[in-house]
Each structure stands twice: as structure tokens, then as C-alpha cells.
Amino acid sequence: MTKERIDWVDYAKGICIILVVMMHTVNRVEGQIGAEGFLGPIVHFAQPFRMPDFFLISGLFLSRSLNGPLAEYIDRKFIHFVYFYVLWHTIQLAVFDLPLLMSSPDSFLSLWLFGFVEPSGTLWFVHMLLIFYAVTRLLRQVPVMVVFAGAVALQSAYQLGWIDTGWTVLDRFANRYVYFFAGYAFAPAVFAFASRAASSVPLALAGLFTWAVINQLGVDRGLHTGFGTSLVLGAMGAAAVCTIAALLVRFDWAKVLRYCGRHSIVIYLVFPIPLAIMLKLIAIGSVSDDLSGPASLVTLAACIVAPLALHRILKPTPLRALFERPNWARLRIDILASSRGEARTRS
Image (cartoon, rainbow, N blue to C red; front, side):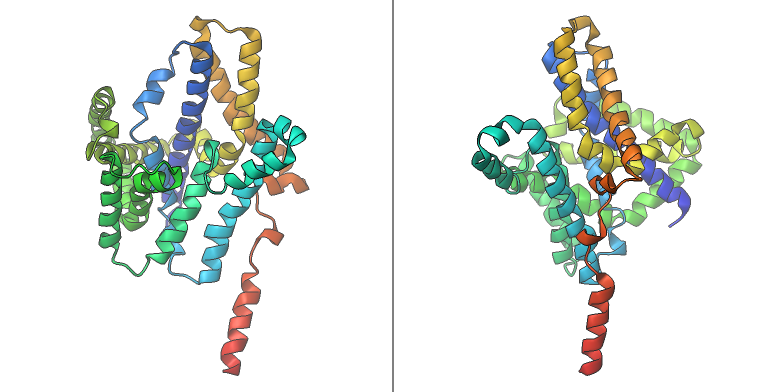
């Protein structure tokens, strides 16, 4: 894998994390103020591809480890996400439900435990990735196109309303797994597509313009939630983000996106807290309707900058464990490998 390819993936992750945070901040700020601002149309425009692209990118490098040693896979793809989910599920619940913790610890514990069955808030993405990695490992011996066809069928059934269990884990799995698996299954094609886009700028720009028109028409007509059309718009949007990322690699000013992409997990885990703080400040300040746009923009900036600043401050301290998994939360792969080697020698 070349450095250029890794770079554009970081840019794409940066675009995705900003769009995801924008959705949450804009919806919450506009809902509180009661008026739409200038970021609202961007949030609506990104509906078809915001999460599909995030999941697709998450699956791009899976082939490196999917068929590797089970212990390494469990450590990097299972324990890794379990650690961050447990840690930040606890932190977020303690922050947002502190009165419940103080008044009724038993109820708080029940709510905490329920969060492992029905993830709440933004952490559902981390919870879902854990499941996606586990399922894909279990299905690794099944022909790729068979699994992909099954994932398409699940997504289609969800869009048709045939899968609507009320359990968001199962419903989201049906709706999103196709994008994650596509990232894994078609990674070589995705990298080749991005490389061609970067080397043919006029053609790439023409394609992006065409996509933008189609995507907006699709959103206006509600096709991003329709049978078949949601999958097509999601795939087109994912391709567009990859194209934009590949084009931005050449610009120094866009390196902020790469930085955000490389630290997307930091932003994703922390941003609900500065968002809650900003919403309190907006409520105290009684922000008027005509300031909905600026208030959303300032809140978005705070929700991106604050997590990155906190990470930078805590990185030299033991509290870096908030963002970097410590050794005690890792499997000792070397010991496991040594044990297997000794067992084979004795046999």
C-alpha cells in the first residue's frame, strides 16, 4: 500500500467525521433555536452517503488481518472496540446521567448494562463496528460474492420495511453491513478508482458535478431511504468522497482533514460532551433565530477542536488511555504464539 493511498483514506475519514459531527451539532442547535441555518442544507445533502462512506472506509484494510491469527484479530478488531465502548459508554453515561447516578445507583447500573444490548447516543457506531468485524471473521470462508449478495438482500429488506424489529442493533446491521463488507470485498477496486480520479482531475470534477446534481435530486425526492435507490446513492456518495479525498491530497491547506481523519476516533468519542456544553451556552445566551447558522458553525468547530486539543494535552500523561488502548487491555500475542509453538514442539 503506497503512502498516497493511505493519505487519501485519512482525508476521506476526515471528511466523514466532520459530516457526522455536523449532523449531530446542526440538528441539536437548530432544534434548540427553532430555525434552520446555512449548514442545514449541507446536512441534508450528506444524508445518502455520510454513514455508508464511514463504514466502507472502515472495511478497506480488513483483508490485512481477516485471515490472520485469531488471537491477533480478537485483540485488534474485538478487544480494541470493546475497550473504547466500555470506557466511553461509562464516561458519557456518568456525565449525562449524573443525577441518576447520585440518586439511584441501581437504576444507573441497569441503564449502563442495557447500553450493551441497545447502544444509545453516538456510540452505536463503535458497537456496530465490533459486530461487523466479528461477523466478517465468521464468514471469511464463505465466497465473497455470496456474502455481498446476502448483505444487499438484507439492506433491501430493511428499506422495504421487512426488517423492522425495533432492536436497533439488528436493524442497523441489516441497513449498514453491505457498505462495510463492500469496503473489504472491493478494496482493490476502490483504491484503483481513487488513483484514477487523482490522475484525471477534469474527469473527476465533471463526475463530482454530475453526482452532486443526482444526489441533491435524490435527497429532494426522498430516494435516499427508498428500496434500491438508497444503496445506489450511498455507493455513489462513497465514491464521490473517495474522489474528493484523492484530489485534496495535493493541497497543503487540506491537511487539516488528514489530521482529523487520523484522529477520527478521538473526535467521535469526545464530541458529545462539548456539544452539550455549547447547547447550554446557547440556551443561556438566548440565541435568536437569525443566528442559527453561526451558532451551528461555532458549535461544530468546538466539537472538532476540543477533542483534538484534549487529546494533545493528555497524550504525554497516563490519561492518554482515554484514547490509546493501554497494554493491560491488550492480548499478549507474543505469549500466545510462544505457547502454541511449545505445544506443537511437545506434540
